[in-house]
Structures are given as structure tokens and as C-alpha cells.
Length: 140
Image (cartoon, rainbow, N blue to C red; front, side):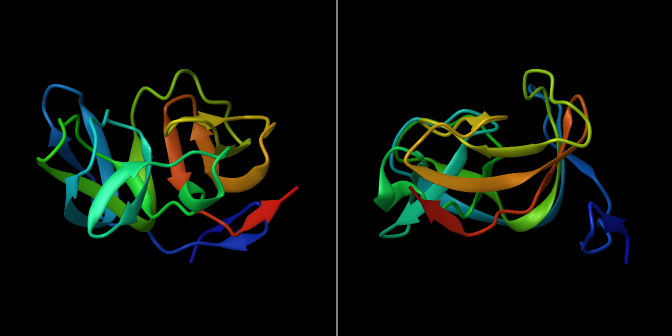
């Protein structure tokens, strides 16, 4: 198993383009959920009543992410989600290789957690590649 930042993570499965329009690449386990609101590709999401919503570090009840949206979908549509952990290549607004990233507001990721609840989302391996490996929440 590869070693990254002192942690082991599973060998990444083959990458495949999941949505032609966005060019997103992902490897790992995926599952389809019904979107409970409009979602954008790259949103960090949580699940409630088998529907997916944007996770938000300011709201404790939505601070438990289950994955990353791999599609842009409107409310009520089936949406493919990378769940658990995996690797995502997408335009995440210029990540910095080697840095940790955290849950922000309304499904976003941020370098510096400044919210009430701190949830690590993963590590960047390049300016557009994220190892999604969420960790437990820390409440301030």
C-alpha cells in the first residue's frame, strides 16, 4: 500500500471519466443517490433520508460528509457520489500539492478551517487532484 503523509491509503483503482462535460476523473467506490437540492460537480455532500445535500461546516447536522458529487444535477435527479475514500481529479480551484483540505460552507473545500466544525476532507497530490479521505469532526 502507498504511504502518504504518514498514513496508508488503498491502492487507487483505475480512473475513468465519469462526466464528459466536466472531465472529472475518479477512482474508488461510487453510489447513486437522489439529490435533495441542486448539486455541482465537486460538492462535498452528506446524506439524510437517502437524499444527498451539500455538507456545511457551519451546521453540525450537515458536517458529516459521505462523499463528493461527481455530477452536476438538479433537485430530484440521481447523482453519482464518490463515497468512503478515493481519488478525484477535477478543477478544484488550484489545490496545493501536499496540503490538507477541510470542509467549508455549502459543499465547498477550504485550506484553512475557520468554521465551528472542522472536518478534514483529504490531501492534494497536485493542483487538481484530491485524495478524498475524510476524518472525524472536531467541534470548537
